[in-house]
Image (cartoon, rainbow over all chains, first blue to last red; front, side):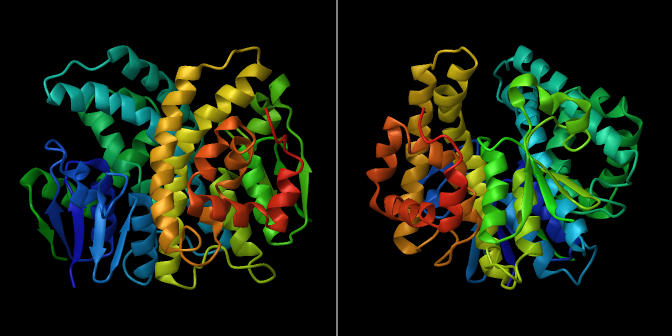
Length: 221
Length: 216
């Protein structure tokens, strides 16, 4: 049975899930949910994902949502296949969990106002709030200084292997760097820049980018 | 050497970690951090939590921050002696714990935390609560609680018919919230009410919340 990702591929959270599935060599198909038409807010969609957000996963009889929970599920389900994304020892798992939460709680709330005001709204022909984006960028710069210190000690966030903690950062930060003119936030930090170049050159991530650009609706390993 | 938790007892994120330690019957030392004098921004604390937040956690050479990550570590480490609040032996049950922990962090917390800030924190730092902020977030919280009500009609707890970290993670902010006049939004939803009463009456919850201020 092929995993179904209900969502829109340009959106950050479905990309997070696609990346994890490709790292693990898991076949999937995209069931397109058009966010611009508000298809994620229809009663039919919200009967499945009551918060009206994407993605929503159907995997045989099992259904779930919240992209960070979804990637944890697949990283555990396919722990024996592909890279180890969760850590092995109690301590390694704790570091993966910690940096997963740093992204979710300390970084993501700053990334959102940047991407929303400088990319999403202009894409819809609406002027975004540049002051709000700039204020968030200044705070994000300070947060990334903490990342710089960590990455001067370890190759990846949780240690010397690529894990979910690195993976969850990529989709939203990519928009910040490539579409919001904020690449300097990463390139002005030697170790963050090296980390960013490394994780975005992973073949699985490049496949995600290919799927988004080609508007493909399926992936087979 | 036992584990150490660095943070004030009234801090909701510090309480989240203490709740897990108490549920597991683990020994720990709580080292206070005085937020009012900026102790959390001093070098000693920044060495433990580089974002200058509470809590921080120490187990030998392992230093952790982010309360939900610390919670997971504690629940895994002490699982043999305590209950199983992560269900990592079952892929699907643990996924449900993760889903509702994400819901707590990204849907529930953003609605309830501003209300907590307005009513409890702002007056402590000489500010006046903004009723518009409270009302706007109460509306958001009610929409979230409607979803919880629908969920808890089907399952006894959020992740399933078992108590888990997903339920426990709600306790600190809900404890404070239930001491405000707005508690009615929980009491008016029968399954959410029953769930809260079951969760908050657990011995570990009573012990930790007893040292947190109960009302504004």
